[in-house]
Structure formats: C-alpha cells, structure tokens
Length: 232
Ligand code: DC
Image (cartoon, rainbow, N blue to C red; front, side, top):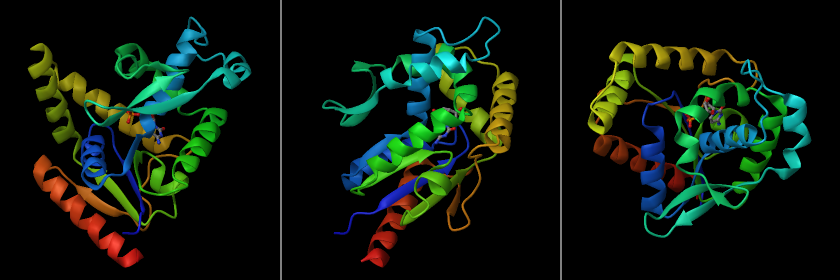
C-alpha cells in the first residue's frame, strides 16, 4: 500500500498526541511528536545556562552551541513508542517537567531554532509513512501532506480533561488556574509571528469536544483509509 504523510495540528491539551500515536501504532507508521523536539531544545538551553536570571534567553550562547545539539527519537521496545533523546540521553520524562513546560514557548518562537527543527522534521518525512503532530505541521513542515487534520475542542473541555487527569494523578488541581493557562497558551500559539497555529485551508477539522477516544480513533482511521485510497 502507498505510504503517505499524516500531519496533525491543534491546540494544546486537545488529545492530538494520543490519537496520532494510536494511529501510527495501528498502521505501522513512524510517530513524531514535534513539540518534544522544542522541549528537548529547551532542556538543552537550561543545561548550558542559556536562560538569563530574568528568564529571557541568551540567544548568542544558544546559537553558538547549536552544533552541540542533537535531538533524536528511539523506539522503546516495551511500549513500541518513540522516546526523545538529547545528545544520546533519554530525556522523555525530563522534557515533560514544569521547568521545561514553563520555558518552551519562548524557545519555540526563536527563528534559528524553528529553522533547524523544521529542516529536521522535513527530513524525517522523506520516505513518508509518518504521522507528525504539532502546531505548524500542516502549514509549514508538510504542506504537501496527503492527510492534514486540525484538532480542536473548547477551552473548557480541554481544561476539564486536564483537571481530571491531575486529580487522578495527584488528587489536587485548580480548574480555574488550568483554564487560564490553556487560554494563555492558545493566545501565544495563535499570535506569534513565526509559524503561528492556524488551520491549513485544506485541513479536515476535528472538534472532539464531545467525542470519546475510541470515537476519535475510528474517525482518524477512516480518514487515513480514504487518503491512502485517493493517493493510489
Ligand atoms: O505540544 P507541546 O505542548 O508538547 O508543545 C511544546 C511547545 O512547542 C509549545 O509551546 C508549542 C510549541 N510547538 C511549536 O511551536 N511548533 C510545533 N510544531 C510543536 C510545538
């Protein structure tokens, strides 16, 4: 069967990684979480002390060290899912820490970082057979992708999902604080100058506010089958 490129963009906390991962596993494609790449760069910037005390970024230092930055993915044989490596070290857990989450947005706005990441992401799609999710995958990385999806859900629904997740994990969460954080991130993602989050004209929109994970999975698999048969 023809291999295609599947590009998935969407708001934060809208479940796009879950559906992208599930689909990749099911159809035997490579899954790449492009957000993990920006997170790994953020961890690298922390490691080389490229954040100033006032939290601005020492871009000279970061730029000067770019040749020492190597972000890769390796498949975990137990979960069959790719994990993120920074200079040969597995950083999958570390890149999800609050420390990194708090600082990743400004890193993702730097032009020299985006240029580098986008070039690497394009190279990963050279042989197709890839599912990649992020914010600019349909618009900048793979505008030629055979299947483009834009995932959305209301901020309230996304906040409630995150709230339930945190309650289950820690027994403690503040719904209003989570909602505020989601709304702020939506604003930054949509209004930044470089590669803002926006729906590609030819992307299929999935509003999953009232869908279960199983329903989403079925929906995406169906779109994949149609895209493959029309690309034959
Ligand atoms: O999806 P995430 O929360 O792991 O993304 C981390 C950050 O990277 C977030 O600030 C958005 C940004 N990002 C981006 O600018 N472009 C992408 N293709 C993916 C993520």
